[in-house]
Image 1 (cartoon, rainbow, N blue to C red):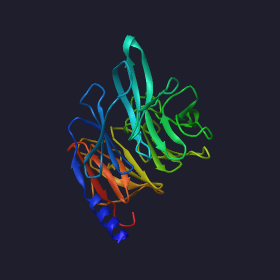
Image 2 (tube, rainbow, N blue to C red; image 1 turned 30 degrees about the horizontal axis):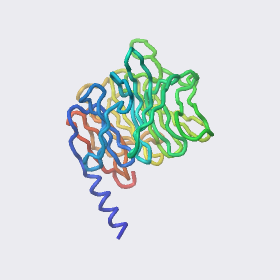
Image 3 (tube, rainbow, N blue to C red; image 1 turned 180 degrees about the vertical axis):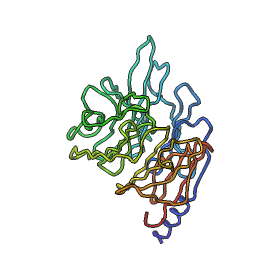
Length: 308
């Protein structure tokens, strides 16, 4: 009976979709919840919904910080217990500014961590080791842990080992900056493993948080035009939404995107199924991918073909 219930639940989830407000600027699917950033105030609101679109929590960015004048959300994630973790750039009274990690539990008061030495541009949470940030810091690494047990590594991903490619104008940008293939991302691909997408490196970096080992997977792209690659992962299965381009051509506004599975090489997953430019992967859930359809301001769940 229990198996039958979960089968029905998975089937309903696969075909779910719902609209998001037009002021939605970012969406993530985390631990069965849809977390969106909606910019209807100076700093915006973080809205937590269930998989059917029902609102469960609303948190104003920077709520709980005293003497706050304005705030900018850099990125956010959610821990397994439902705690929302937000990387903020905050401006206070008398011109004082600070970088802050805000922890908003489902119950109780928020806590705050000042990030004086770390620029936390992207953020992700691992259940065993804690919360990690992607960005520059005093150390010559790009991945930094800001919470969790005292034991274990606190920084990974040495900058000197990251290959950075110049764009078409000959300019070389930092590996954590946006590039011609989109913006960087940091994803928990499996417990104990983070996946970093660095567009200016044209690669994915898989970081084993226990051993410190880093594996690089180059992407099959020549960054000539402007693309928007996105990725999602679940139980070490990694999917990417890529433009379908003929050899030697640049991307256009009408270029369709399709789904690919990380393999040797990447292989198409849903052949014949395409999405318009502007659709992004924002998560996975039990054999379904979760897509944010920006042009239609809609969240969509798409079931993967059997065996994929």
